[in-house]
Length: 236
Image 1 (cartoon, rainbow, N blue to C red):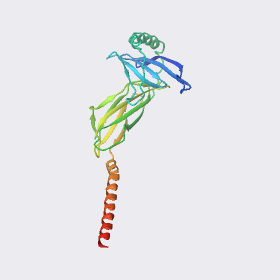
Image 2 (image 1 turned 135 degrees about the vertical axis):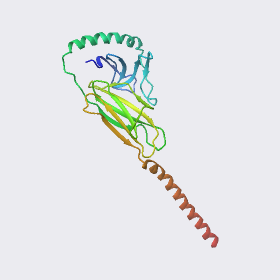
Image 3 (image 1 turned 90 degrees about the vertical axis):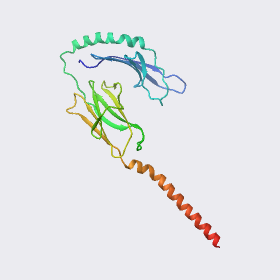
Image 4 (image 1 turned 180 degrees about the vertical axis):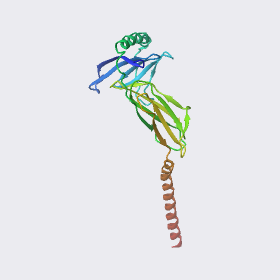
């Protein structure tokens, strides 16, 4: 119980607004803390709209740039009060559950790319550790069996509906033929580190060049046919 403990989950169900919308949406705040940090997040229909950054003292939106803009309510006062409240409640809960066995959930690890891979074009690899508890997880990246730290980022923890957590780590990279990347996740519920490997496929560029080569060949063939017809007409 000395790791992150989500103490309070507030979910307020409100009706959809607008004549084009039907049904209901869920809006709420997820609050949690551990011995060294606190989390104060705003959620809407299961998606995290933003969280309060205690180091920068501001609300940080988490939706991608291409998503529809969302207005995050002003919860700054509540977020600032939360650490003291959470520590107090955590002490009470820890005393009540001090002798209970700890529940562990091992993470599921997946590795995929952000956009369609093209050789020598900047891209991002995404390593997802999901459905684990408790935090933290540790994520390591390698390129051709060498540790990589540059261009690596680790996002905030996301709480799933069943109480487990998920987190994303990204690696910015430029694909080169033959490169091999790996993502390794460590968690105390695992018997050993879980590693996922991705290798740059040299056929990516060849496939992308195929339509161009085909078009050139067709143009040359058509040009040859036209030249032949012109010569025949001249001879006649």
